[in-house]
Amino acid sequence: MHPSVIFGVISPLILHAAAGIVNGLTQIVRYFLYFMSTHKSKVQD
Image 1: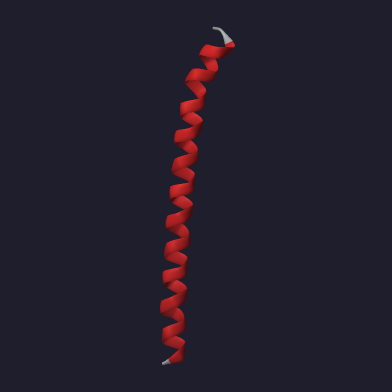
Image 2: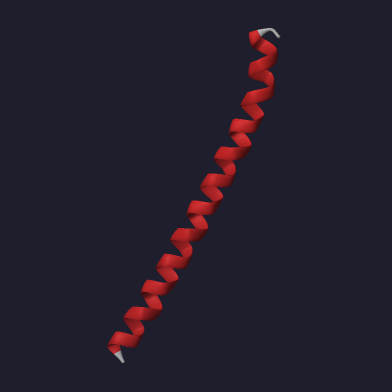
């Protein structure tokens, strides 16, 4: 296989994987911030 063909096949997979990782990280950060906000409110009460 030519390098251009390999790059054409792998690069979309890398982009898809990167998008999935970023999406997962943003969800983790959201849950963490939500947990921290609820925890702080409980402490204040």
